[in-house]
Image 1 (cartoon, rainbow, N blue to C red):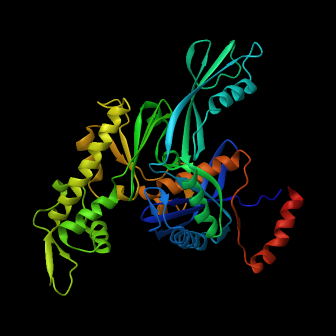
Image 2 (image 1 turned 90 degrees about the vertical axis):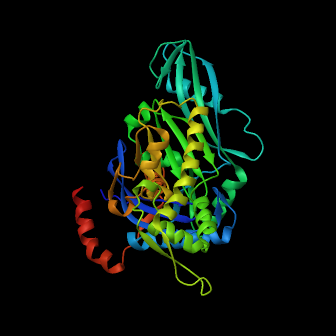
Image 3 (image 1 turned 180 degrees about the vertical axis):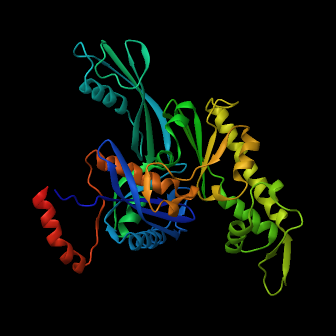
Length: 418
């Protein structure tokens, strides 16, 4: 029996860049789906601010550029994409549900009913439900049950974690992608997607914070006992660092971004005090130099402030003072700066590591081995799970007629055998 290649695509629309990843669903289906990375695309994006599309045309142009590069590398076309969404317009709350058990044993229908009760709440104006994640089930006052099917009881309860997004923000994101010529198959919370790519099951069980330091915002997500427990978005991130460099060193925004990328170090003690860097300058300014330590100091100060705000968020969520045994995992475009891990360890006083995607993927793994690819790789892993459960994939392989002509007899021969 011949099987068409099941292609999926993940799209991360950030405040400075759009990342696209195209993959093929492989592995032991439906039990253990894996994503074989075939193509990667990266494009500048100035149309999104703090998770919200502000300029649909600019965002569409960025989507076209990123996906075109990924499609060229993959030798494949995709029609639909799984898209990440994040930002201050995302909110989360817990919602309880209770039902009486209809028979002696709890069935899948009882679980579906109690989930439906927990979901049936008023979301408010301009809100749409993104995810409903059962935190735990309770059977006749017995807590901490993850799957109650088959248990005996008369009363079934659930604590559901509901993640909602602003409808207009979601619609504008869909519109920008559609204008680029693609369908949005799914909208997925970015930290949830990233967790598939960079967190281990043990980390999520013990207690871990996933910290996505992007261009426009910093996302804070806490996992404990295998589930999302807290979600927050801070409006300070890499863009503030760039603005500080502009103001202190008297360079343009584009030059500040380049200086940060090429010479930036997040932890000042790592820099040699004697090292000098050449600063971009106007004819009036003349040739200029500055100590690399000075650039590092600007970055260090701002990121230190951001990490202290994150630490306050841990306290607010009830996970301060070392209540995250697995520590902090850093992702996002700003997380690639040298010294980020050292600075974070200094502030949080707990284990910290950079989260580059490596779980559940094969193929062009080296092309996505950076924290900025945590979200798009997580999105294709999320899509792979959906395809394994029976959802339609998002693309098809593009073959030249010549290749098809050569392989057609072989394909027919294989079909006769299988």
